[in-house]
Length: 376
Image (tube, rainbow, N blue to C red; front, side):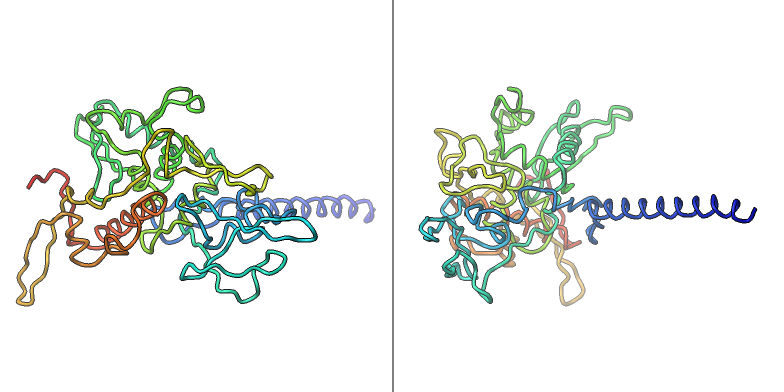
């Protein structure tokens, strides 16, 4: 009788243990797909995604002709004026194979070995993405974020303006209380969702957006915004609040979310991880017939800040300065104007970085207040 009673007990105990093990494995998978967020309060908890499942960043296990194998999406590369990687041909076993060219901190190409590999100890520069890793989440996450942003931008009676660093701001009446609501698109995921849309379509109706560009109204009167300037500020809003943004970071992010634009550039001998030829955003001619993208820091000369300074005698001084003057007086831009080319991809990366530095300054100093309605 004892044996009869022990058998089912042992059986159910075994089944219980198998069930618990299965649940633990499932939890591990969820943890891998949804890593913990960092200390930034405006970073979504799901940021990061499952990078192993994203074909844009998988290691190349087949051919060295796909963005330089396992380092093409990690290091700074030699690029042309549009950010397109310059491919290096190496004859291997009688056939020509092509590799991307990594560079050191001074932009000097690093000599590859006879097989196109980076020599051990070479001074490569890794590209850091920080909060921008949210673009590696499933496309559905960005699609949802885009709709959330559009709820604000398309609110009945909404008037759109730009804040101190160029982020889109919507002012509209509350449908219930009629009180005025002012909402800036500052969420990283919403900002990057808008960035993706702008870099794919700008303000054009295309077959891909069903001939209905949701942001087209921003290019019409009374706004007449430049889509790439807006895109640069959206990129900045989605990136880390501190640090700098460079060309490699911009081009890699475009690759992760398929932002090749309306007039893409085909990079010969460059293939993605699905073995399709790689295309890149054309900053020299964003759409057929367009002039080359050119950034001007004067966009910050018409936005104003109130700055309170504590004097040595304990009194306070209040000043009103343009964002441009305030940043230049304190040397807060990453580079002096004219130090970096302001055209094509270099100009776009400069526009993004300027917006990051302005955002860091205004958010980081409680004595600085943006004056959206100020007229000198």
